[in-house]
Length: 401
Image 1: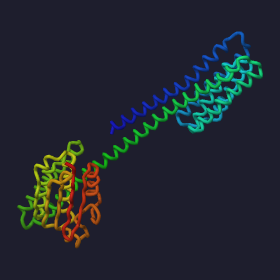
Image 2: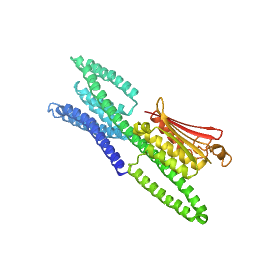
Image 3: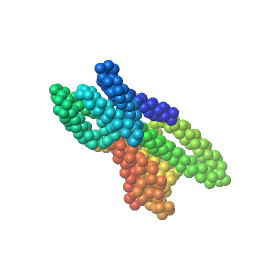
């Protein structure tokens, strides 16, 4: 659990650092471009001191307001009225003062930067539409002003504003898009981690059901038999209780192994154990098992077939009154076919209404065993089915070789 938390914390820390870096990149771009562009003009002694002071203050206010707005955008917060008004007002002043004295190379930088920051709060399509409108409006203002004041370099008055819009807008929207992609990927990573944990819990629950359900059913059966034999045959009762003790020890060891992640189901051992347990319960077992086939199967199919044997055996003990059972493992077109059948379904139907399935359609079990195994077999290309024909109940599993 601590490992999962550490991974989550590292991922969140990395995302916070990336967000901070993106903000520094965006705010730094605005500050550097406006600072370098306006700095020379503000320090020019040929320009009136009052105009220089007004331009410098409005440019500084534009940088601060844009930086605050960028920070709110990076945190997915909306713009506040105060900072919107500050950014727009400072940007207009920083543009109007140079434009009024005929500086057509400087005036459009502050409004272009401000517009690029503000459109980041709009949906993508509307943001590009606003940038397109700015690409028309700002050059038009420069062109009209140049013509009205008799500026000889009319082209410079038109293309400089267009260049500023193109330089600021796409670059800042592109950096924002990169941040949004990173945030979505982080969300997807977090969801994937949560799904992996949930899947592992389901797997653990299924394995724990397989272990404890089987052992506890046999322990209950043998304990009941020992109780009946306690007075009539104390020696046999003691033997049954020794077997109960051994089964309890086996369940404890397998549970510990499962928790430690070392447990592996062995098909041969499960078939041998099923034959022994069913025989102890008075069920005659007939096994036809291809030992070479069992050994040649890959780990995953072999393990799942072992779980099918265990679950089917548990269901026979829990839900049927079988006297005979068969276990068959033979080659199949797909790989291997395992069939476990018993003759106790009809007898059980007269009792609690079970079909001997325990889990699945028509059964009275908890609905987790065979259904869960069917899903796990399906995931590796196998199949699990169960049928009830008169007094015979059969579980059939196929796996790829």
